[in-house]
Length: 310
Image 1: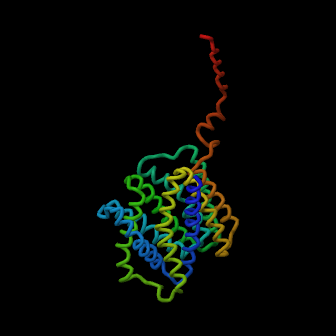
Image 2 (image 1 turned 120 degrees about the vertical axis):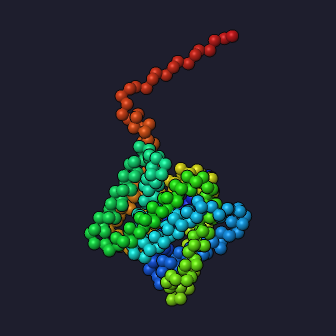
Image 3 (image 1 turned 90 degrees about the horizontal axis):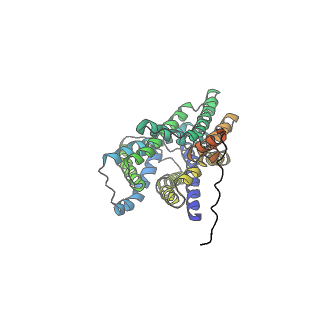
């Protein structure tokens, strides 16, 4: 359990830092295409030995779809969103929206409705996103960036649901989607897409290559899998609900971004809603509601049979 909690906390820290580091990349001379190239170029090189060991079958249309939508689509929309929006907005609209969007994709693709107890959490997430929308209407010029971040969250939610639907092992899904994303994107990037690598500081390039390609693509995946193995998916989901609040705190501390009342309310609501959506407490469960609303008394305890001598 201690080892699993350590793995879970490291995964949460890396995911939270991803928001801040990606926003730093969006404020630098690097283009979003540079960020995608560093993510999948470095990630593919690091994953090649794992692919050779696992012998993941790449000639699979399912892995191609996962790579184009869940990996490449997610990254392109996210990095463009980080260029046009703030890290505080991303903290609400990326990790905060996922517990809301995954049940919607499950309902759309498989007809699975969320449990009644989870609806409270989903409602809080919707309220948190509404607070961000109110701030945008009040004058914050990041509407297009926020829309791109929502699209990125939709791609990742689709990826999460589709991996489960295809019954592909998460390691094989990560290897296949990252390699396909690199194969499809890197030639186009080298030939036609604009780049800022020539004018960007070497430190900024190395930071993004290490964080996006090594930590975000490879290390976090392994930490997540090991944490689920040791503490279970439910506890890991509850731990991941810390990401919106923690990434928001890191953005305030490291980037000194302005925090309005609406945005603070959005962070609090989305964090609380994410936790309730992935791990509803017992007092919100259907059984607890039934106990609270029931007027019947508990049945009397049956008397113990008396022992008789043989």
